[in-house]
Image 1 (cartoon, helix red, strand yellow):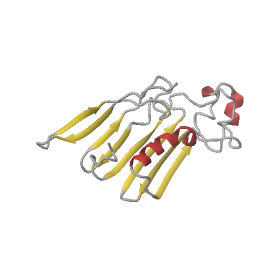
Image 2: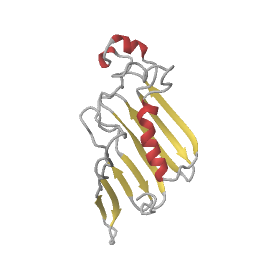
Image 3: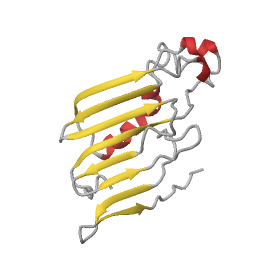
Image 4: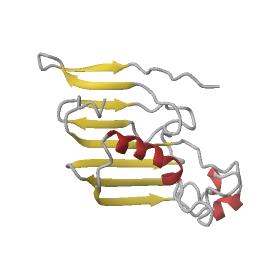
Length: 178
């Protein structure tokens, strides 16, 4: 839909996602220590949402980036399977960025492994002719990480009379190959 040109020139994108309680520790500490992971939620699940939107707009070059990261949950034993893991936590459990891209596009990005919210927000593409919203699936604890299914897709546009309207886009499920 984005690549079809139906939105017109895209000027703003909101993307990201996250998990309510989803710091990946069932496999030990390989995801939470710098020596084995290097980076946390940003690389683990943030890469999916960034790739999805950048692919849709043709991977324009970033011009400026303002970023932020934190580790409020990973360093708190309350949110970890054991106190030892909280002490070893060295990566981000939340990351955000405001990225100015060429072609006058703004990319607003947020990703989290753990938060007191069901999502950091849905995908939103704002174009000069229409907007597109891709809802996150909102699972109880793991919802909103773009490493799984997607939710409802809505095209916001004006009808032939200029009246604001919206259209639901059907999702065609892919058949699983054996």
